[in-house]
Structure formats: structure tokens, C-alpha cells
Image (cartoon, rainbow, N blue to C red; front, side, top):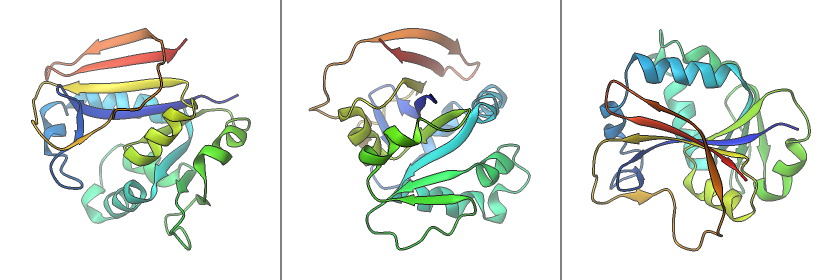
Amino acid sequence: MRKLIMWNVISLDGYFEGRQAWDLDFHQTVFGEELQDFSIEQLKTADTLVFGGKTYKGMFDYWTSGEAAGDAVTPFMNDLPKIVCSTSFEAAEWNNTTLVRDGVAEIPELKQGGNGNMFVFGSGNLAESLMKADLFDEYRLCVAPVFLGEGRRLFNEGLPYQKLELREERTLKTGGVILMYGVK
């Protein structure tokens, strides 16, 4: 069975997005060659990317634009199979994308197929639903050495108790720390 893995960059005070949607400037505090290499390392183990509707739209806009041309991550993002979990989408524009109406109901079955990992990037609402349904096998976070003070938190009140074990940590030259936790 494939693993469902969350990947997010968060601030030290727990925000994964700033005050407004797609306010991700703080990612630049940790971005560098090491984080890019780690991103590629992860994508090489993936056979599916999973997004909520808002993140899917933002990722589609970025990775299919000329802005991402030449980035070593671009071929992975555009070529890997993708799932967008949305009740409002009529169709998915990004190549190699499957539309799923109810991620909580359908992802357990989707985890049964494939040979690689399934990664959820961003997608705060979807991630919260998947956490509440106990569907993640692993959490990977890059903690940025910055306090945002406000924005959108990744982990909200009301999440169920879940014991995790630290599987790996990596300190980046930028001061960021990558933490990889498995579900016990």
C-alpha cells in the first residue's frame, strides 16, 4: 500500500500561509539548493500528487506558466499523476489529473494502488479533513525560522490526538529544519 504523506513549509509559529491566500513569501527564508534537492528527492518517490481545489488552481497556474520554466522541479510537477479533491470543479485542466469529489471517502481506496508515495502539498482544508479521518501515514514539515504573527495555521483546534515518531530531521544552511514524522 502507498503512503499518504503531507508536505508543507510552516513558520515557527505554525502558519503555512500568510495573511492572504498564497502569501508564501516566508518560503524564501528556507529555500535554497538543499530544499530544492529535497523536493526532487521526494518527487522521485511519488507516483501521485494530491491537492485541494484552491491549491490545485494555484499550483496549476504556477507550474504550467513560463515562470516555472527551467526549474528542476517543473517536469515532476507537470508529469506526475495528480488528484484534485473538489466538489465545485467541473473538470481538471492540468494534464494527468483525476477529479475526486470526496477525498476522505476515495483516498483510502486510491492508497491501495500504485508503487510510490502520494503527497499532499498545501491544501489546508483537505489536509485537515484527511488528518481527522486518520489517513496520513507521514507528516513532513520544513519549519522556517520566522514568526509570521498571523495568517492561516496548518494545524487547527479540533484535530484528534495522534502519536507520532520522529523518523528523520535535516537542518538546512538557511536555518530551516525538515522534520519527518511517521504515524505510530
